[in-house]
Amino acid sequence: MTAIVENVMTTDVAAVNQNASFHTVAELLISRGVSGVPVLDDENRVLGVVSEDDLLAKHEFKQLYYGEDYRPPLRARIRHGAGAGGGGYRKSLGETAGALMTSPARVTTPDTPVVAAARVMDRYGVKRLPVVDAGGRLVGIVSRRDLIKIFLRPDEDIERHVREIVRAGDHALDVAVAEGVVTLTGTLPEHSQAVTAVRLAENVDGVVSVRDELSWKHDDIADVPMWGGA
Image 1 (cartoon, one colour):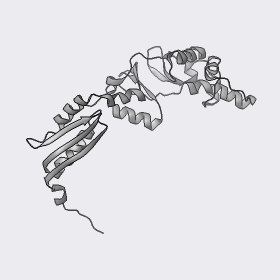
Image 2: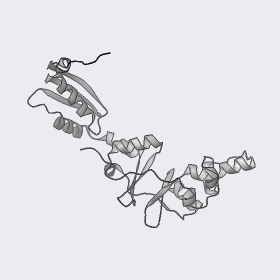
Image 3: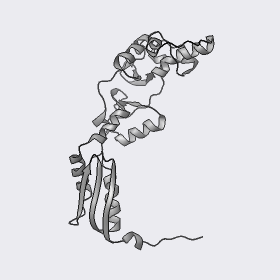
Image 4: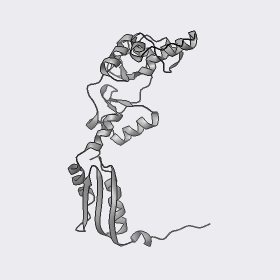
């Protein structure tokens, strides 16, 4: 099985309504120890995400406009509607989560493979993704930290899974796993079977890397003619 977002997401989500005040958002970020939260409409649908950077845009604009040099500590800046982070003129005037948020939000769904969610985070440079149902309603949130959980899968589970997918009939092939590192040993009839076994093992959830110590009796890959020309 391929791990999906539902397996690792958090369902106890800190979120705010689009009409929540600046101070409500700031206090929630501080009390929950998070750097951003989803912004919802009255039907619990995700409209965007409001983060520390969005709140801190207000102070950045004030610094640019008034030439202020003094920057109080982060907690004080958030509680008093000040900060330093980008966001533009619009956000500098924002008083509610809806005005402050970044929209549209990058979201994912419970049945999305963990690998696909990780790629979205990397592509857009975000640290978390709200998880929504088919109607766009919030059902959870997944962070980069949550995605790392798949690498904590017990070695016994990984070994069992790898053995199931790399079986090569009655041929001698052994699987050993230590701290997520898979070692494949044995002799297979064909070179292509060894290559396939390694690739299958690499795709198992929780595998950190695969050590290929396989050998083969016949190099069927070398037998394939190479076609080409000028």
